[in-house]
Image (cartoon, rainbow, N blue to C red; front, side, top):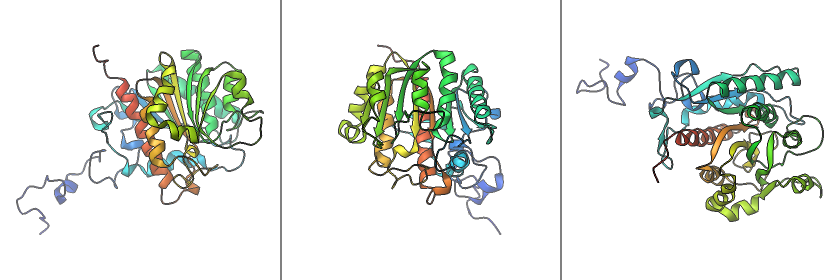
Length: 330
């Protein structure tokens, strides 16, 4: 009565038999709209024998000065995972062929105490790094990067940073999502002359970039970024070769027409194609960790931003996997 395949083969991809079999839905399964959502549809950490890349949610927006909502970022990004890709042709990476990526869940971060929240983030990232796992943190506001840099510095010492953003985040003042890179430089967490900011286009005063000039921080504005293209960016990034590199990506780096779901959207930025192409410029660098921040689902439209965030995460994870391959003999 219910046989849809007259051949009797109920194992074909579009057969009802595939549903009758039950079981968990994986990344390469055509039924992507079912199953419990995880980051990029990868398994939970408890189900990965030897995790090497850990995607961890950091649902915290206590560093926001104006528009909260990014605490819902990890949940929104997971919910949009059902369209996430599985294969990266440029890097020849298939997630299902590399069972080393895990969804580590969300950090239990206090929404009431900034000090407690930062300590929690620092401790959780430290635990992942101590376990030999490359952390991919998903915020949350961009202020989460500050305790992550603290944790990474204790292991690696000062390191290089590539920062994709519409804002420089080097304002003066106490801890917010707009001051953390000034704090990181002043506290010696990162190498200022190996700190490259890409896509910056929001200015508040004529003195906005005095701090960058004082410390030798390289700023590649959005117009220059477009002129350089992926190949030109890769050449600029090559001066970081031989150094440990941390990559931080604020979703408002992308033009607000392509990523409306963020707390501080800015026009005149790269479109989604240009933004994703930037990851091609990172190949070959010794990347020790990533973060993706400032996705705010309450302001999103049809999951445009949350889905784009999945593509950003996919680029990050694919780079991390590709870096684990044995070097080709020269």
